[in-house]
Image (cartoon, rainbow, N blue to C red; front, top):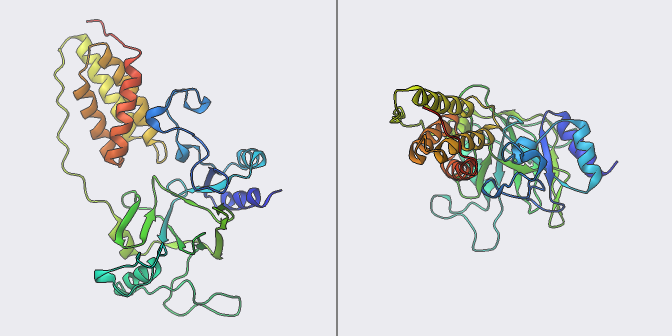
Length: 322
């Protein structure tokens, strides 16, 4: 059994959902195309685009098949794994250092440690390592990985209550990113450009600190006005209205990891009605955008998926008899 297969199975045994990365690379091996270029030729995309998050798995048989075929790197899908990973980067060169409020900080770890101290929860993943050295009182330890470039990944449990947390880049401070729903990290056991990702502290992920959950919580959505669609009052209008409600429900009730795929399928369905003349593209897009926002999908991701789905649906017009 290869080291990569062993590592992938070990991560899955923790309940973490893994998927193949291109060998020695950060990019997903599958799918090899974005949503807006999905042709449906990939067997998993026959009913709509299926991205890396939906393909991530804990199934040992699927993992063995994949990692026995090629020396794939290991991607870890944070959302399905119920993880929030804090990514603490290192400077790329001598000019790439925090400035302003963060002047004097050497890297992302310094910035994050400063934030933690300000909130009364000091952390130091480099203190307390080793079987004979107990952790310091008041210092929170969590599963920790050293990245290929010498940065740090701190793994935390996603809160069970509250909104689904998503990715951030620099929101907390320079060189501090986070990965949650819709994001992934390169898992320990992988290499990128020949540099290994190694476990630094092998323990269970700690609960996400309350202060950090508050910092990462998405802003509340503005009040959503009901979609006003001008439809005839006859049987065809009732049919189209029911179709809109059905596809919106498909998106809002989809489980984490499946929401973008559900949005694509919904857009294809409404795109068929649009092409058949029963619904305007503006009304279809508006209904889908509101459903996607309620499901917590980002605006850029939403716009791309809706555009792709409507275009695919337009190739198979559906006309509704009056």
